[in-house]
Image (tube, rainbow, N blue to C red; front, top):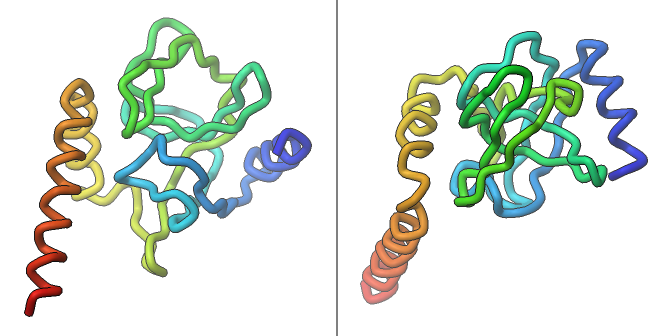
Length: 149
């Protein structure tokens, strides 16, 4: 990926939309590892709750949500993480997720249901592990009921 990041950056900055398959669980439940894809475009103005693709100092490409801004830096956090990542600069940001694809269907990040999810999920950062645990337990219970039928 280190070799690809300059090429990706150039493609996106030239106006192209780039589709990437998601790897990792840091943005779960919004994005699922190796199941979902994102469409990334250049963005002139970044807003709180946007999900930019950025390059860490070590060269790693990351998709995390903007949860804050101070002067010229952003604070990021994955939807499945508790730890904030501060000090991300505009220069590190390659583009922003415009939409994502799950099971062949494309969901826009301007969709009101998506925006509602983002507005609710971010403030719940500290209790997310509990919410995710409950969600897994509920799905397991539902599956068990279906298997019994």
